[in-house]
Every structure is written in structure tokens, then in C-alpha cells.
Length: 98
View (cartoon, rainbow, N blue to C red):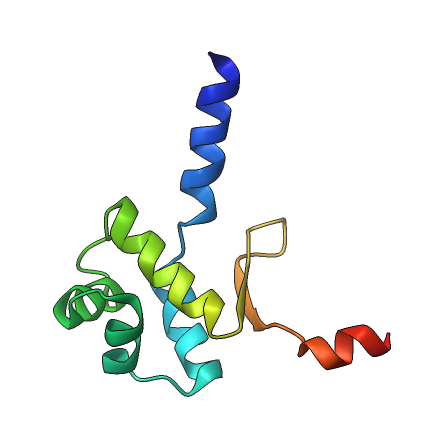
């Protein structure tokens, strides 16, 4: 039973980002809020409210936003003593050269 709870918590935290991370990710990608709404299938007003700090999207909605940004090339960095962050993935052709 403990393993199941751990897995649920791991999944929840994987798909949890802050409004700052969302804005930063969009900025790195040059993506508008409208573009993210379309890519994620999330209503534009929900994104606007989230980024302004007026609401925190529920699980499936947050998951859709995170997946859309990750699919576009974003990596979310968890708080690991240095604070949360966001960066671009390395292009695959650069990874294979290393």
C-alpha cells in the first residue's frame, strides 16, 4: 500500500509547476499564452488565471500544460536546494555528439 501512495505522490509532483516556471518556459519557447492553450487543450482563461496566481489548475489540467511544454522542448527543474527552474532540452543531434 505504501508503494502505491509513493507512486501517486511521485506522479503528482512530476506534473506540478509554478506560475513562474510556466511563464519562463513560454518565454524560452517564444510561445504565447494562446499558443500554450491550443497546444495543451486548456482553456485560455485557466492559463491566464494560473500565471497571475489566481488559481492552481487541477491534476489533469496541470498535466496537460506540463506535457505541452515538455513536448515543445522544455525541461522542468525541481527545487533541489537551488530553487525551481526551467531550461530547454538539448537538441538530439547535439546529445549524440557528446
